[in-house]
Image (cartoon, rainbow, N blue to C red):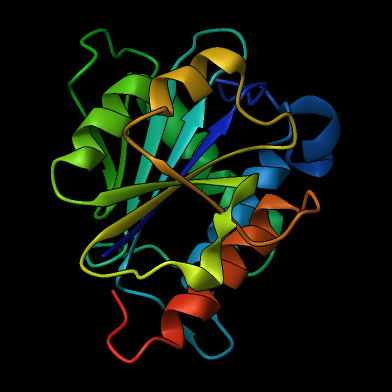
Amino acid sequence: MRTFIIKANEAHTRADFKLSDLPGTSGRIDVLCRFLNSAFLLSHGFRKNVRVWLLLYGPPDPPKAIRFEGPELKVRLNPDERSTAKLIMKALKMGEGLREPGKEVEVYPGLYISNRTFEDVIRLTLKNSTLYYLHEEGKPVKDVQFSGNVAFVLGDHKGLDAEDEAFLDGIAERVSVGEKSYLASHVVAYTNILLDSLPSPP
């Protein structure tokens, strides 16, 4: 299983944004839509061996953790951002009454929402996956020997803050797809393609 975790620092945690203006009204949920599509979609197919955590930390009620579970997912992901944003909006509406941090609500089969924090999700992921932090200054990803279940953490257009990075120190190896700062959706697409090329992909 491949897990991708992205922390979105400004993404709205209530369905109060406009689908017609995602960049301007949602705290850049459009970035998350492109990230999801790059994680799951193939030209004529869908990756079942992928799990994605969207960790939303924007106003007005952070945090919200939305989990897409590839093997279980029944809703259709389409290449357009609007339909993907509708799924996120539906999840946020379902999560409005959540109070317990560890409790998940099933929005659709394979799509869940909770109040889990960044740290909660990382600890949960570490139970069955080797963790990597995608960062420009990390070890070249092509030189890493991947095996078993792997999980990748990255930030949105704002990146992870110093506190998040300090938390990851010692539990996640820093790996890089290049010295430049690339779009999160491009990074996950490149990582998927690299893993696909391995003799026994995770």
